[in-house]
Figure 1 (cartoon, rainbow, N blue to C red):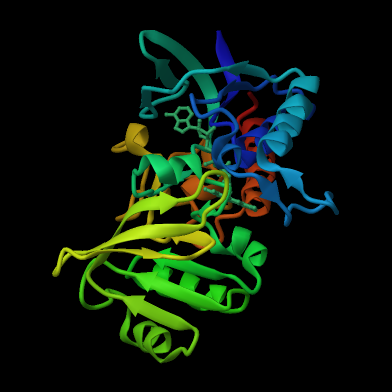
Figure 2 (figure 1 turned 30 degrees about the vertical axis):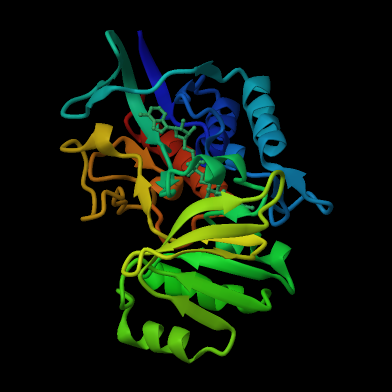
Amino acid sequence: MTEKVVIIGSGPAGLTAAIYTARADLRPLMIEGMARGGQLMLTTDVENYPGFPDGIMGPELMESFRKQAERFDTRIMTSDVTKVDFSSRPFKIWVDEDGYLADSVIISTGASARWLGLESETKLRGHGVSACATCDGFFFRGKEIAVVGGGDSAAEEALFLTKFASKVYLIHRRDELRASKIMANRVLEHDKIEVLWDTVVEEVLGDTLVTGLRLRNKVTDDVSELAVEGLFLAIGHDPNTKVFQGQIEMDDKGYIITGDNTMTSVPGVFAAGDVTDHVYRQAITAAGMGCQAAIDAERWLDEQEV
Ligand SMILES: Cc1cc2nc3c(=O)[nH]c(=O)nc-3n(C[C@H](O)[C@H](O)[C@H](O)COP(=O)(O)OP(=O)(O)OC[C@H]3O[C@@H](n4cnc5c(N)ncnc54)[C@H](O)[C@@H]3O)c2cc1C
């Protein structure tokens, strides 16, 4: 049997694509991935998703997306896609040994923020530890916080966070910033930002909320504690696209390139959300792109008379 549309990934982009394709009678099959619900499952309060004036918890929001997709008969499989072949139609998609055929595919596998990999950091994610300043900066009004990183995005996040925080420590493991000169200068000249050079975070302190960091100076080996209430990681994101390598065009960082609206370099394969977007990275933009991809897929299938 050939599916009309297979959606890969179940974050805001994939589930929105599912709602739209299901309501267009395309009976989508969603292979949702083992990280069911996507990145918002890793956070607590979401205060910027329209329609929730009092905010909503990330996992609760994603459960509502899912219920809405299931209400219109989206079939959902909790597995990771392990291989694809987009060289001819119908497209082939594998989950281990099981193969699926599809007339069209919507890729919404998102991106993963890079974390330090500390146990204490994982424990306090959403409780003072974040990887998204746009999303969570607002919660740190008047507080002292730290940002880890040294590139342009770390500089941008640190500068953005000065709007809320009373003080921002930028923790960088080297003795100079990798950020562009103009961004680096803005950081160095900002009176609310203090850069801690040659420094790494060894532990995030706090039981239920972040209360501080244990730091190590890489040159002197000195260990110290820094009292902060928030920690923002700005050490990059990795798009989840390994499985599509060699099948569709990507940029040098692995983000999928879309040309004609959400169409990828392979006609009939569409991409939506953070997997194709390293600029906005928001649930609302991912959901918007999921809607676009669904409409694009529906129109493309019509044109092919599928
Ligand atoms: C800590 C944190 C807090 C955030 N807070 C906010 C916020 O308050 N407001 C906001 O707007 N945004 C927030 N964001 C950003 C937001 O979560 C993302 O922009 C959004 O989730 C992107 O949606 P997406 O559908 O593109 O991908 P994702 O949410 O990344 O979902 C990707 C999906 O793809 C699946 N997948 C991956 N690989 C495979 C595979 N091989 N096979 C099958 N499935 C696969 C995963 O299982 C997952 O379901 C936050 C992000 C983080 C990390």
